[in-house]
Image 1 (cartoon, rainbow, N blue to C red):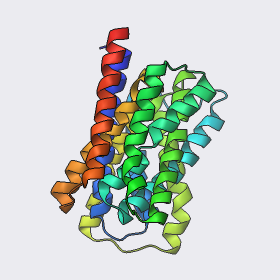
Image 2: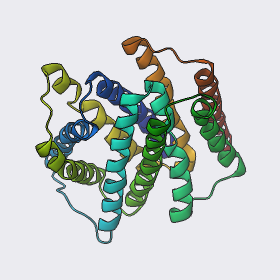
Image 3: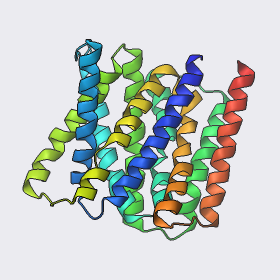
Image 4: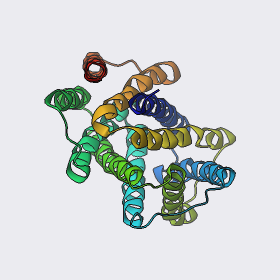
Length: 281
């Protein structure tokens, strides 16, 4: 399996994991987004720690990478908080739509920071998927504040994933990136948790264990380590499809015609990108 196909596999796995994460966040009830974020990252931190100990590589920040690690962690944390707020206040698939603005911004920042060139066909496919994700919030009366916060989460996630791509090219170990981000997020959200902790039931604890979140973090990190954003980021939009399926079976949420139109466009762009890259190869 070449690097591009590995990247596609990992980013699709990440999309599925994040879809489950959002569903679990919704199932955890009306807990504050900050509290959900803390427990979501706490488990990811310990999973990354176990992997580092087993690999015997140790935690190490390569020379010159600290600023990129901090940027990845900062924008990643803000992105999570915004996404969780949107998940709690919007239909699951719609919240995922807004969060999936991130691949578009990964492309932009990879172009600006890494000089990863795009062909016109690749740029058109990404723009098409971006338009598909915009159809629902543009043509319907979605709640304005949750929608804007969800969009902000997508932008922050895009910047964070661009930092992941940079770190991969600079030789930073993926497990170190995940543990730094998870630990940073826990430290940032801990003061709020201590000041305004909401008691949790056994079910809420179970849904916030963070296993799906950890899978998503390792998946997205591995994906951008293996392939350029211009070739694989479009497959991150598959999270919308996964979220729609989970939303239907878990919450009885049925997407309307605008959502369906957006999904069709996104799937068509992903298929086109796959065929285009295959023909180039």
